[in-house]
Image 1: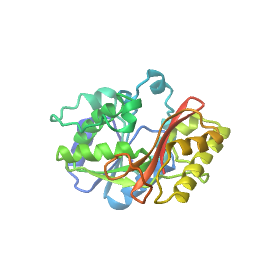
Image 2: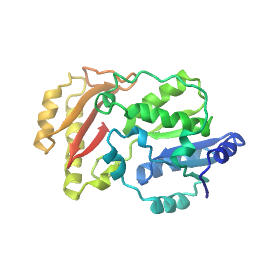
Image 3: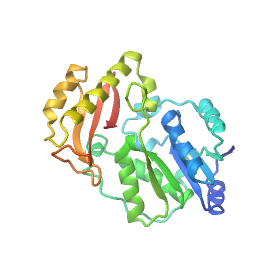
Image 4: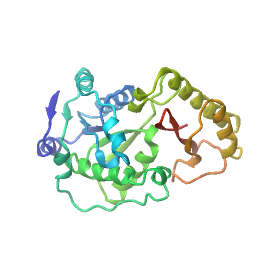
Length: 268
């Protein structure tokens, strides 16, 4: 594995190779990231992993400063997985990269935007740069952040980018909750509650298949397992991210909620 810190060097590597897989991360790698890297290794001749904690997608400076970082552990994981190139750029390396002007997709009606005003703009800012530095690649992204995957795929389409966004299934713990770097900020008690949240939503969807979705009913069920603060819980059509009324195979239940002041998202 080669560690690259300069944008122009990684760009030259990509330009000289056709079948490149790219896994953009913010580090603190877990089994979800490992799954993405393994898929890239399987489908592509070269795999690039980036680790860059993007300050522009954090609404609160405190969240950015407290975001868990385990770079030495991340290096060992990437080496073990035989990643070809690990891209570790500075802020200037990413944002001083000159790329063509881009069109941003509409994000005002996406759920996360309502509660995190600058989040998706920050995500698109950094992905605009990264996909210019690492162009024409297969980009492997997890479905846990489905809203993020959706807007980045839309971004590539409207800007005619040749990068292919590859969605990958959410990797979950043996207790059901989605793996996330933020889980490190929570204790065992909270992990048990997260497991109950997952099981509650999964059972609700199973027991109400093809029936009308009830926001109030599922909120009451979640209160019983200890969830008090919820930003949103909606039934969403996966093809267009619009709110749906009837549960089906084309819909997922999206949720953003809090445990011990840590904000968690999932879709089931």
